[in-house]
Image (cartoon, rainbow, N blue to C red):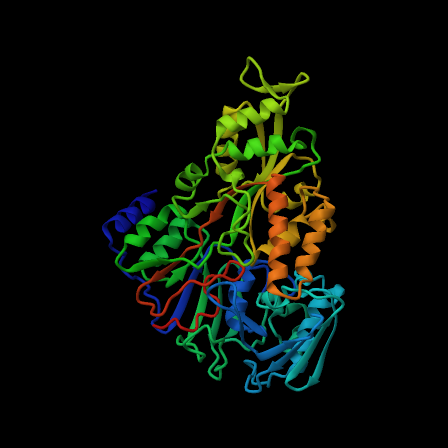
Length: 526
């Protein structure tokens, strides 16, 4: 507690702790709260893995800061067949792995086949589309053939699961690949990993093929990068304030306003917060099977209070499931779910047959309107669940909470014994979020709503297989209308993503690829 008081005093006065271990000027030190299970992007969907892989490896294509535009990376250009099923990528011929091995089309084929091999059990295999063959036409040309069009293939290929790896390194290390070593083509070269402590990478001196989203295409301007794990909130703040760390995007919300006022710090945000915290309805449960009840529950929550009190302003009250700046967001999406209107909530519940009893709770046919919510025991989830519980108590709804440790929460969700659940999730576009969560083939997870609607499926299929932007947008716009009209979720907060950077770091700008705000960091300079 004394440390917390000291730190908050320092923040309030704009001072910093004496730099007992000032970060080396040629080392970029990133402070974060959790480590990754490994650094093999094929074997995990952990965002902590991606944070390192984006800087130690490359993908065929890159994502610009607008989070919409696809740019060249290892592929300098590409063509798509008229029927949308075949992509031909033309590769750079000046790329080398950290080991010095020359990068060729064979590396792309091996890397993609590794993701697609069902024996690998890659959690992001679905992001590869309905691939049937990946072949090398020659040393600098790759053909990617699918059984049907996949309109979001390029966007998905910017994610870390599509990082190109060196076959020799993977086969030499076996199960220890991404643990004891890795060999990528990125601006930094993996050196060591001490689990739950730190990961170290050194500058790839030959690197000169960075994506054009950066002014500097390489080499990186720091000699090495270190990702240090600091689980305790106040200790992360102390590390930044004392100069022992250069940046972090895992700072607690309550510290951000004060950090933004410090003369030595800046708080940067990406173009869009593509991460939604929501409550989901299992629509097949009796008490919430009526869309009027689900709508009433959504309209009974004051999101601004949640953003102010729980997020300390680091977020946007959510009117819709998709952020307005996301690719294929439909501006005409019904926004009634995000409106705070307890009077309308009460009217809808009355209309649905749930009348207020003398004890302040609603009943229908002698049965109390009681709901059970499952959520995470850590982070913001308990506070948000308690806020929902309070808002719904005002309209006569009895919300029971069951919060589970993160190690078992998904196994508990798999048992399907709940009315609602709470969670946040990152996404890269409207189509990315909608297809994953609302298609009937994804029941019972992640379509935990048990939403099985032919019209939704048909529109999602049209969007995924669209051959032009207009058709794709129209299809996903239709889905947004359907799922909002049916009130399948309670959208709460487009969660703020903040990159806190010491001002000694020049060229800093926040990106956002699957939660990673640094991406490749090529413009960062000491």
